[in-house]
Image (cartoon, rainbow, N blue to C red; front, side, top):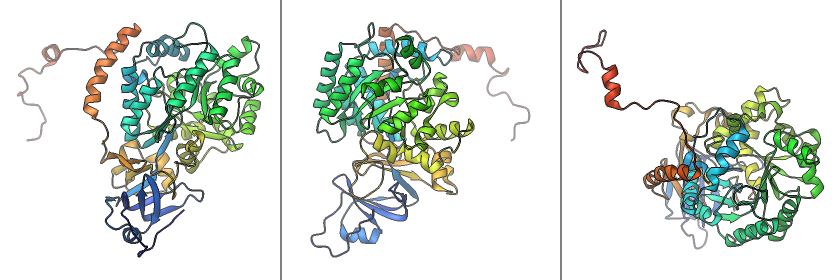
Length: 491
């Protein structure tokens, strides 16, 4: 894990950056922590980890990032994050409507009304918010009308991403096409992003009961041929199993196994409502699952009653964490997702719940493996991408520093992120995004939100009344005006 070039090496050259004097949580196989360590970054990769003096000698004249008082952890990996439509109308779908109504009466119409400009902006917004929390990689699970515009938005912000387009062939829904046309569009998106150093393509279907067997099997064949991963949604609630039964199919995971589409290339979003045989099928085939606990709570989908994710992981299955969307979970804060996952599993009395160190692995090294990037990111090791997050341990939530994995999952928060690097590039510095103008994004988002709601025909009634300041003041002012003395006020 640690390779330190010695002083006096022939032709010493500056590194692109030295991250100096940090406590480094490597998340390598031995889970080593390196106190007071320094990381040399060359060409976007981790070139060496070791003492500052040795790395300064090996790379004289290198620019330095002082990490004194910081904990450096691998960039977090969000394995299921929608980046379109919802970011422009975030936290707007009422939280008292059933999940299926929220999806088909609100979310689908919003997606059906987006423009390419909307998609690029909302992807940029999602990316900068994610980066501010220390998320350096996200997988967009496919509800994307304009995948190349989404890729442009992610790239502008500087986040690592996996992107695909809409993929379903159900009748009467936006962007649906026959299976052959859907697969052609998927292949076109993957080809257009081939070779991109940050944002690459995946085969992405909507899933549920909204995809034909022809499209499921065609997607698996396409992913194999293109040597990429694939993802779709399945069984976040009990509805998918009921729909499969009504159509005369086996339970969803068993049906996918019968089709031959399960396997290490596939990442299923959710897979909450499973029976024992379905859990076994996922483990045996190496199919990964992205758990999004914030979404299940927001939509009331029953994770605390039916979730089988700990059982999946304990049986040797592959598991990662996701945040879902800005109206289902409402934030790409993966720290919150980790805490919710750990707490919900413990609270419902799961046998042998995952420990904090295991949950943090879901957010880093295991998440990277689930999105097909285990060899590139997810841990701090020589040769891997310099996807690094610096947490300021001089902030109040870290006083004093306790057991690191426990504090990372249960105590630390995204607001203690100071700096973030993706591929060795500083995309967050002192808590501020360096890549895009956030103020300009704010103004554009407000305008596009109103226009998108109009096009979608959605009206969001406010739950709290709006009272003009003049009226409010007239109704509630203290006799004598603001200068009137208050009893008991200290001199």
